[in-house]
Image (cartoon, rainbow, N blue to C red; front, side, top):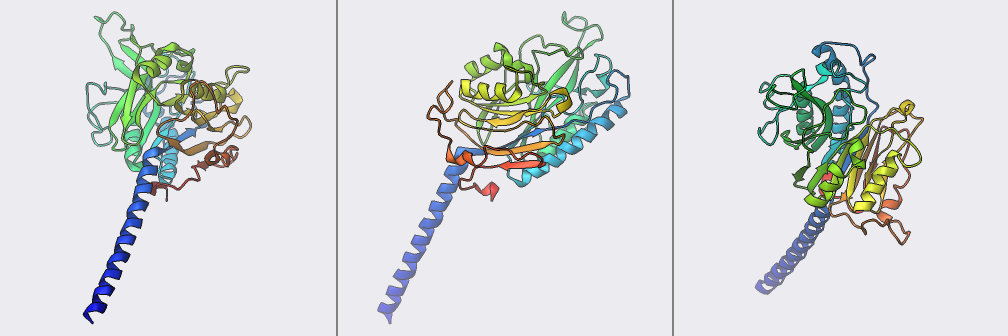
Amino acid sequence: MSGARSKLALFLCGCYVVALGAHTGEESVAEHHEAEYYVAAVYEHPSILSPNPLALISRQEALELMNQNLDIYEQQVMTAAQKGVQIIVFPEDGIHGFNFTRTSIYPFLDFMPSPQVVGWNPCLEPRRFNDTEVLQRLSCMAIKGDMFLVANLGTKQPCHSSDPGCPNDGRYQFNTNVVFSNKGTLVDRYRKHNLYFEAAFDVPLNVDHITFDTPFAGRFGIFTCFDILFFDPAVRLLRDYKVKHVVYPTAWMNQLPLLAAIEIQKAFAVAFGINVLAANVHHPVLGMTGSGIHTPLESFWYHDMENPKSHLIIAQVAKNPVGLIGAENATGETDPSHRSHSVAQIGVEWHDLSSPKPLPPRLK
């Protein structure tokens, strides 16, 4: 009996070791895969616009309009969260709109402290500063969705007459991108430098070269719309700060032959060997459409000049972009992991473009 027990014990021990090895191997594969990719989303938004952007309205009226857009943002965050998204990008002008004067946009502006000077979580500290309702909602969305969140809004910054650049009305007004961590902390801001017929905003005295670090993909850079056509900040950011991922809110009007949104975004990703997460507003009547998640070898994009609906793109993105800088897939072969997603489904509210490779735990 003792011999039988010994053999049975050895057999059970062997089974346990094999099972443990298989389980460890599965965990190793999952961890390795999770380390190679992150899950990103960009949202093309048909923003609700002010019927008369030249009119002078109250802060409360401005918040009522902006909250309509923020309600839609929150819906998209929760949809993205169900797919394990780790970072989401919203477009330029998506919250407040455009075509304002310097005076008429004032009620739409949030006060913006410098994240380099002040550590702040707007959702958890809503009364710390006045006129920060939009920042508070965005911060709470990031917490609720457990993801990094990038959005664009108008901001204001008081200045003194001793400042030689201070405008006559005593304040700077900036077209501003903000980045929130998945904990709701205001990580950083970027103030648009190359304005495009934007009389409501000021050009920052110095160019912002902004990067932020994430736990899932390392360092990201950020700039806005028209900036992509200029050395500063776009090219300098990539050259001097070793950025491999760019988040890019835009309100881009397509103009052929060389200024179509998808073409510019994709060309930038290929030329510099980086990943570009680009979110555009969606107003076909104004020629505004074209968003995408672009890698040096492949793009997942949305462009529709007829359908008025919004579109959410979700994709797995390589943590380390693959491809020769300045050369798009010279073999002409499409990576099988992307082939099934090369045609966007038009008319759906959101579109999951995740890779058919084994999914990390967040996506299962």
